[in-house]
Length: 299
Image (tube, rainbow, N blue to C red; front, side, top):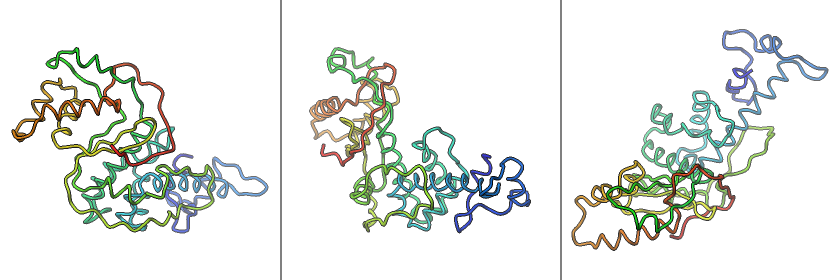
């Protein structure tokens, strides 16, 4: 049954007539699906085959509108179908459907051709949004807990829903522009009668190369992204790896300009990050937070 569900549809969105070994699919279907007074075994099985594909394609369309805009509808559909054949749904939640898309695209770069670097940046940013949207959260760490600790031994934990990205393109602004009039995560019907055709995306000029550092996170149940200075990115990613605060600061500011008051910047950063609840205790992840309202962060 699983093999039948995962087999891609024909160009007309119907179940394939031949099985993997060359036999007629109708004959194979008859071995494990009973007909009824209205439908043959093939027709009954086809309903499930089509609904599986309509559902997963619809989710990929909803989760990666930026990638769709970069590649174009036809190229995106080819990529999506190839990806879903190679990496079918293995989770109880369709939220995880695109978790291996970056890895797949690196393994099969021809799907993005000359736009591979841009496509990878977009995939990473859009997947980070999904993680931030409904990833687990832990109780925030109290400010006093950090102030009283020894920096040489203090290892700050960061919320698991935060993703820090070093990008070659300013895809944060680009993706937000693409989906400005769309919900961040469209709610698809549980029963569809056709393959997703995709909404007509607003024409947005492709971003030019520009090294940017971005944190994708949530605050008060809303999704945000925040640009970071290179030193802030280096510091946060070091902390995320479990390095002590003192060592992380030493690494982040190595080679930094001596004409900048880094102590004041560090104070401002930590005040802002603490207010956003980025630092957390080591307790068991709390209840996942979900919200349908998302916006570009003003901070």
